[in-house]
Image 1 (cartoon, one colour):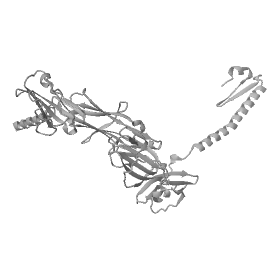
Image 2 (image 1 turned 90 degrees about the horizontal axis):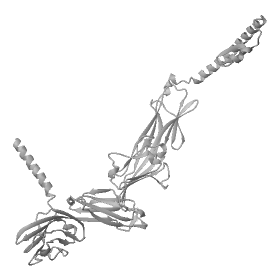
Image 3 (image 1 turned 180 degrees about the horizontal axis):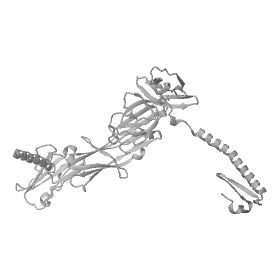
Length: 503
């Protein structure tokens, strides 16, 4: 059992190693742009005399080698080249030892190239070069109409020849890019403006030698006199719904990974031909966001929506005024996908009067509200309701509150599509602790002070009478003064006033 397991592991490891080394069975990597003059190097200055050269190719994914050019000392070109542009770089190769191959490749010419050197039919050297072809495309073609989505695509075949591809905008500004299967490395600029004109650079990093990079330029000009017109718009089914104020609401966008998102809003109960307001925009490729004052109550939603991946959705925490029509547009290249949401916002509040409480139910975007009413938790209790105008319905609770009027008061909106939205207001008996005792306490304090005044006056009168009585008896001949402080009464002779006066 153990020997079988070891055998399995050995075989598996051998397969993995073979697979890995099979991707690096070359001596050099050459990456060139399609239709660009190319040289595949092959040199050996040590050989002389009867020399023959065979250049062969094995296309990527093929099993067999195919002869593309052969040459010898006696007959310099004994084998016809497979392409009209194909030749050796040095016609005196037998003297210089330079056997490099020159040609102008197409995309289909990528693959492994073998330079086999023979001397008197004896193999001296073989050099294998992996040739990878870079294709660069941009769309739409220059000059580009304003507001178009510029697409820059770079693809290398075979992909194993490189480590990465990057894009930079004019001025050397790095661009966000994505590697897409069967397409290549893509960079985009949605909503192109005149300022986006310039030279865009694609940089290719070959496998194993990042210092030997290849760059390709793309010149882009923007047509200042032409604006793109987007007529390919896909509309989703309109969503009609309602939510209680200050409650999180999931505002959906089309389920597509796009390049750019725009969220428009038309304020509640406005006429549909009114101008819509842009409240949020997000550029997936530039990584930029534009928010307005209202959009502070908006944020990009998390999973399963991922703005980084280009999927968009919002969380809205609306106030009453934030109802209305929302239109979310997601653009992908020159296609636009639109989703409309008609939103009513419900809010309840209480107004207090000396003899009653008024329970108000307010709602916006009245166009989709079919019915609004107040209900009590005691279903047998019928409520009287009045309307103070469009988007408002109220009921009255008389004061003082009694047990029979307590309970849950619920405002219910019914939309035209049958959806119900509720908001509650709870009425309870007042607790003993809620009784206002501030005013009576203040009155009691004032009354106590008023009662204290005659008592102080009486005390002063008694003291004056006693002092006069003593004076008549001759116990003191001085005049007396008195001073009244907030908490005591002081009495002393005039002769001592300068020493004892003061609080």
